[in-house]
Length: 204
Image (cartoon, rainbow, N blue to C red; front, side, top):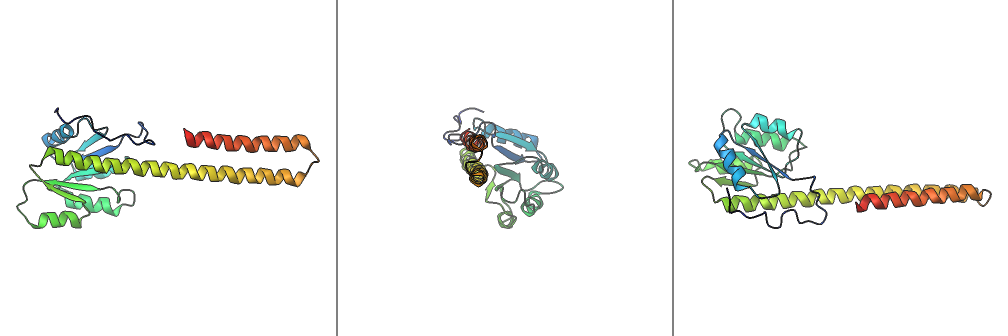
């Protein structure tokens, strides 16, 4: 499907990494619906992973990280509400936003059940493709920001460790005084190398 543009501002974050392409999990028992979702989201810098059941979704969530889950509410076997309940009970996946997609709402309690199960949105079919696309784009942006913040936190930890190591080396050098200039020079050189390596790691 064409006419949806190139994804706009997605992927423009200074700290984003192409290797960490955001993934969107689409769950629907109808193959034609999964194809339609892929077409709607085409052009966004994401990977759409389609599965046909709640069981498949739960298995995929064990090994992959997703920016958002597009979940069909009414499926045979484990329906979307039960699937969402399992997702929200798992520590690994409880933070992933869930958007329920379902046919025309003939039951006024379905939306309530969706939100009660932990969904952030509940969209009935047929829906405006642009609306779904825009909402997915927002959740993907949030995921990318979260990844950037997590990586920067790891970089700060690395710098703190380098500072601690350097302080230990300098303390050891002070303890030797001027008795061994060669050993002192070697210790200071190793301290500078440790800091330099940390700076390179956090700037890459």
